[in-house]
Image (cartoon, rainbow, N blue to C red; front, side):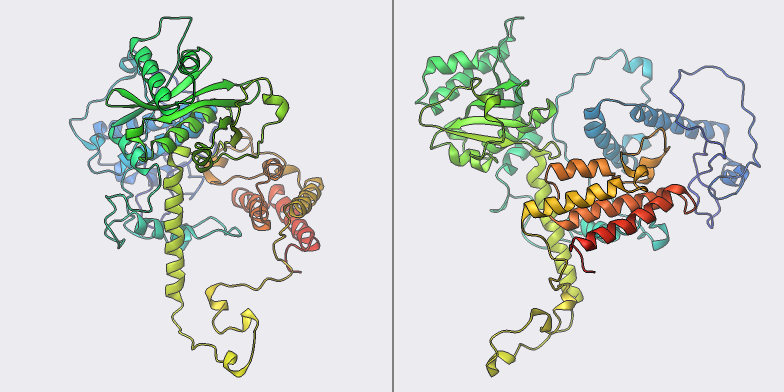
Length: 548
């Protein structure tokens, strides 16, 4: 359907010849077979740039047939991989492994040391791969070094329209290249842990080096347990007994070896040094944490935090998003640091009679967010802080003029309007006017709910009611990086995601921007987006959320 290399002429910006009549979806992968050669018309024009197919392959005229076949083999492999992932239906695979696959593939392709560029690299054929049983243990991999673009992208390549609240991608890329380049960042050595590093930073590094391991284990009545697992369960019993002296040993033993309970164990040098014993109640939508402890000589190393983060990701994978536990006065502080609170989100009818009530302990709960990668959460927050700090520094560098101090207070003036301070507006400060944020969350929720309902009821809202279906708009998700629709906004509103009007407006604006980017101006969808956008801003002005 398209050539594997763009046109050789430098003036053409086309990224590959495209057929005038492409199929609606990629064809399913089929085993190799001998077929009659298909007639190719080198005069057929490209759908993107109108150049002929022959113009797109002028640089291959003097290339040997062997080299052409090698390049075609690469294209077939990539197309096959794309088709397999495109048709993947498992949500976990799409969300986790597809993004990992893309990042790792990009790292390999652009790495000069990658084995795929080696002449001695041997191909492994499909029939050999299918004969191998592969067992994977999930771990955290260190990302590759960020590659640097040889030339900055010009504005003619920037097709994405600006959305309210967006920071230009050119600026983000520049800041990212700065904070990830050790030669560009000044300050203390980053190889050593700073005093302000996250609690789980040391534990995360040890896991990457293979010093520690995490395993979810449990006893079984259906099959004979592995000897190593039994040894680990005995080790967990000893750790819990030593660290929880007020808990009867017989009770600890009964729960640790109970087949209904599981334990996330922390293994170091082949022995158990900590763990979290829990019981899952899938029908009730929560898990009870029974015991949580790390051996005394391995404490204050971030193991407790990293243990809990692994437990959170394990439960997100199994779609159980609530923890409940009874904490004594010594454990309340730990659980608070892990996101637990006394405000229980699970309805009482869901857990009464399911969990044991401990005398003198406090019931605490934690609600999980399935969008958060908990084991990498502190790294993400740290990176975000660095980005914000760098953006602030850039903004400060742009403000070159130095103003003298205010002298009006010496003359008896007690206060002045903020906007009258010289240079204040140049810093990006904006006065709080009629479009100020609504401080009452319930009032904001009510206003946004009313506006969203009116937008959904509008006659031109029909194209945006639900997410775009792939079979109805081929290539949509390759063009649109951040899809949005009214159904998703309704779900976000119900979950109280919109804590400010700006978040709500940004999502709504993204619907209109995405539509205009994918569809031609003469299309009905494009016109619906323009009319609905005007209606939306009328309603949001009427609600007093922006200046009229």
